Length: 107
Length: 404
Ligand SMILES: Cc1cc2nc3c(=O)[nH]c(=O)nc-3n(C[C@H](O)[C@H](O)[C@H](O)COP(=O)(O)OP(=O)(O)OC[C@H]3O[C@@H](n4cnc5c(N)ncnc54)[C@H](O)[C@@H]3O)c2cc1C
Image 1 (cartoon, each protein chain N blue to C red):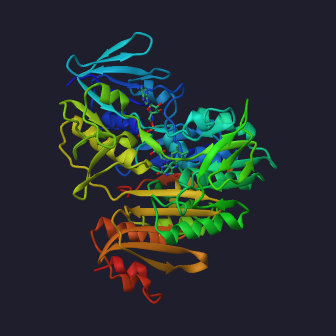
Image 2 (cartoon, rainbow over the protein chains, first blue to last red):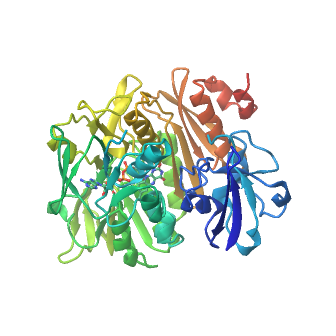
Image 3 (cartoon, chains in turn blue, brown):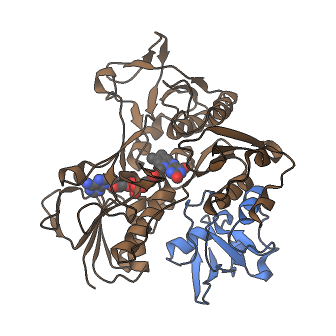
């Protein structure tokens, strides 16, 4: 379980507990948090679950695989360091305190 | 505005529609009627990770069950809508209930075609792949060493074949058309996937029709049109779907390859709408019906907005994906009417097939090539067509095409 803070583009914060084994995307979906669409349901097929992770977390997360890297390159206003696809981030205890911020829109 | 909006069909489209209504501020009553016993779920994993056993049931749900009550959406699971009376504005439910609506959306999806009973289609051990119940029913048959016959080389059949091969089953796939994926892809893409499956040990037989299935109490195999006999412990059919339009047809709505709607998602009856697999809509001067997650979500969101008065026309750049073994196929656009295909090799075995009509780009099939897919999608969204020779040239930096 990890406590994760999701910050909407407009600044609204949602702090929720997400069980291990789910993805950061599923944590948002299951708590009805807007701003992460995840149209493909987590198959790394669409890039609409894009977030910016808090700078303090960039190096603590598992590395992006090439598929995620390539998809992110074409997400809405990606940041080379901070952008991640939340469907590729598995929740473990190590993510306790993770902070992610949603982009202005998902494309 | 306290209109009661009723949505029939609790799948990908219905779930997106009711969520959008609430998201857009509709505060009148909303009822979602679904025949299946579970809350709305995503189907793609059914022939992929869920069938492989790598994804738990709860992760299939599009929203947690509590979502609906929390958003004051009345979710009726296990409830079949029997009839719609558009003059009275009512829906009759199986078991005798009745709903009065102010506006109605039909998101009834599609039904899998089955092999005729006369050739063994109703024998135990013959499966279709549409619902959770279908997949749970075939899961016990997926044991290493078992022999499975897959009838139909479309995406569903191919994905099921891939899972079976990965689980150590002995897989034969027959396709009556001269090549797999004939209805949806170019020969280049068909050949690429036939080769992929053969390398994983699947016996792919193209141009091979089925004569009949064999077996008395349970399927034991098949006889092919060329007389070949095949033994099988079970059979998976992936021979296409038909739009679930019977309810709409009985209600007097216009049917044309599914429930016919206009660009806004309206049927000819005011206040009655349709979206998703069950609906055909105007597209490039004709009419099309798409069977995809993209269309289920996007078309329903347009319908939700339009039910609330937005008046927006749905004109998508469709997209789709399929996972087979370690290959992710991503498709942008719709290749209908293509005249030629340009093949572009990417890095590390990635390859993409670009469909053109004249000089106009229509679609891209990208195999393990997300860059080609995303660039193709962005080009299509911008209505731009790079010259085919530009795409073909290994010297072209694809990403640079998006600039300027
Ligand atoms: C195994 C499988 C794999 C797939 N993989 C992909 C993929 O990788 N990528 C992709 O883009 N698409 C994929 N698809 C297609 C995608 O899942 C569908 O296009 C999508 O589910 C369509 O959504 P829908 O809401 O229109 O229909 P559905 O999701 O089928 O929902 C319709 C619902 O309406 C209910 N219903 C029908 N009639 C009534 C009635 N009279 N009363 C009450 N309820 C009713 C049905 O029971 C059903 O639950 C796949 C489909 C399947 C089956």
